[in-house]
Length: 249
Image (cartoon, rainbow, N blue to C red):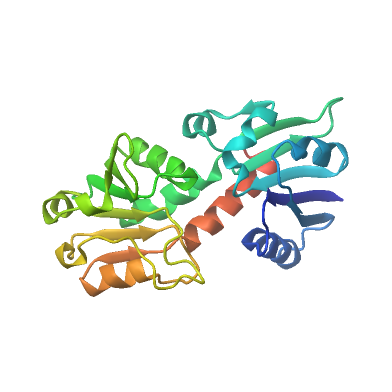
């Protein structure tokens, strides 16, 4: 039986396991299963693969998207540029298992964002500068959209939330939240910016998908802006992982 799974820690709940288990059942995909592998340290992937000869592919979540890189045999060009992977294809037919990393987050974000873009979406504010922001920056660069990172603490090439002014919001009409702000159970949290200066020209994208409408999206919608959550991105990146695992590279 071909086995797939998710590595990360902790893995209290998993979209991926539910998604793939339902996919296998609904599409009558036989001899496949999807498991959760909560590993504390990224180097545990070596033992995991060695002890599971049926393992053909892994998704990667927090906190291993970056620190799993040294344990891969190869990384595709996009993932190398992003500096993070969330999908690993495993070839167990060779003498030593061969692991190749990909970033399907970038694909999911790009394909869900592009239909929403208007000609005036030339500049973006990215809230947060952690691992999730890496794929977002890569996609924006590919789309020739300039960006500015907004962070809580002073950092190079970034501004503080307190520096987001009406003037900045006039130019930066694409707003992307890559932080956990607003995610269950912290429903009342959101990026602290002057929402009164947001209008119909703004598009807000929140990588958070639970709840489906975060406080950030509600505040932008109240000002007439367009909104999008991260649910479609999640589905798209999962389907892209399946293509990769089945040699659709």
